Amino acid sequence: MANVLIIDDDEELCMELKEILEDEGYKAWVALDGRAGKELMEHNAYAVVILDLKLPELNGYEVLKTAKQAASGPKIIVLSGRPLGDTPLNEPRDRHAEEDKILTLADAVMNKPVPIPLLLDKIKSYTC
Image 1 (spheres, helix red, strand yellow):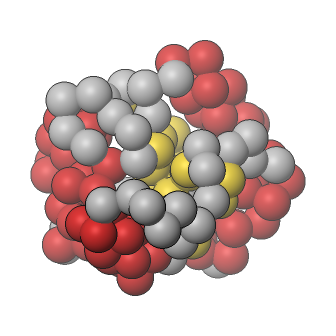
Image 2 (image 1 turned 30 degrees about the horizontal axis):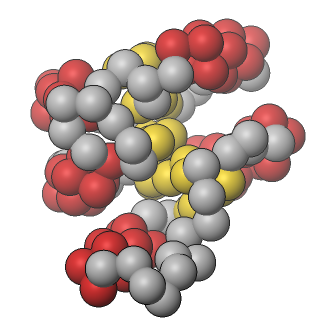
């Protein structure tokens, strides 16, 4: 089955997703910060990367850029605590630009809490 990397600083969520993915037959790895996730992608090939945006060490946008440059070309599912592209108008312009770039680079964006059946369907669509 396919290799899936979960990059999120919520350890409980990561362990839950890892267990669910392994029960579904996937090989799952976990990184609890952006730097660890980037290092794993530099040394391993993943079919899918599940990526939180707010990460310690290296933010999700930087990890996303690295993932899109990876030779294995993983599909990226971004998890967000709030809807992207829904930034209030009074927010700084660079925040709008960064969100636009994320929406362009990501293969899918899902809001937390993510419905597990929906996430599994998306992963399956990328790995079949």
